[in-house]
Length: 116
Image 1 (spheres, helix red, strand yellow):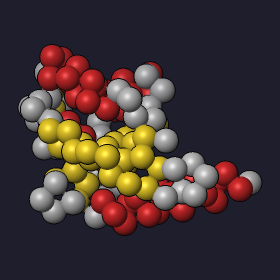
Image 2 (image 1 turned 120 degrees about the vertical axis):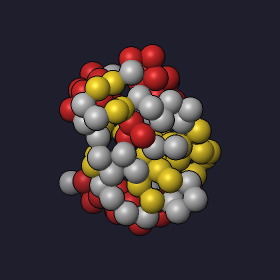
Image 3 (image 1 turned 60 degrees about the horizontal axis):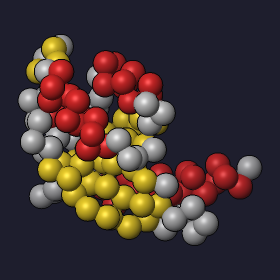
Image 4 (image 1 turned 135 degrees about the vertical axis):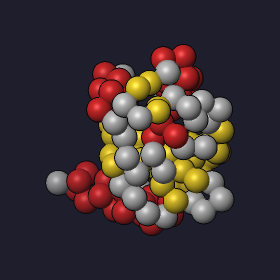
């Protein structure tokens, strides 16, 4: 399973989806529930969200960055972005914290959920 975290790469903290400087791309192995960071994808479209408005071209670029992921985790994500991601069968979670902690918790959640 592949997921994207909207993140501040320097601090490895989660960030707002539409204004994050990068997306950290992670693979979670579905049998062992271990995760590994694959890459960091720079978000050149940090101006996709401004207040309650959206720049359509910039937002389309962000969707391309996370289009191969099944889940997106961000500190905050607006309703418009959430709807567009869900429409593309990408799950959305709003969570704050350090990237490694978020990944550990998400992998533990998947492991518990898949046992039931």
